[in-house]
Length: 125
Figure 1 (cartoon, rainbow, N blue to C red):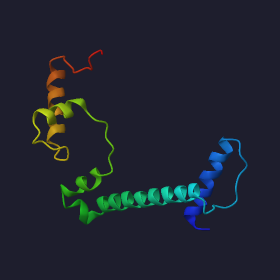
Figure 2 (cartoon, helix red, strand yellow):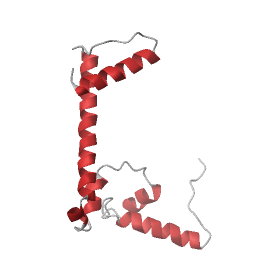
Figure 3 (tube, rainbow, N blue to C red):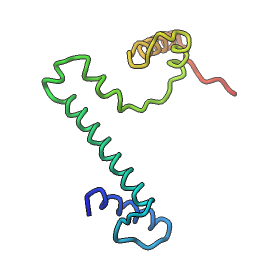
């Protein structure tokens, strides 16, 4: 049994236990087991991709390259949508999310409002 199949078996038995079913001892060739194995393979590949990016970021020669280090990690960030950023992009569509310009403008706007004792809040619906 491969490492991936061992992980799939552990997940399958965890779910079976939660549902009140007895454990199984092998991963079969049935479709649901194949789906589980594929999902774990994809998760492992993604973890490796993140690991490689972070390792590259941490490497001394890579850190000396300056601005490129942060961009290599941006692809892994799942950020909550910021309504103010969305509004900026709607008003000024030439701004892009990855440039960081919109985020810096929205932070500056929030800071300027806070300095005046103001803040942006979500309106009651």
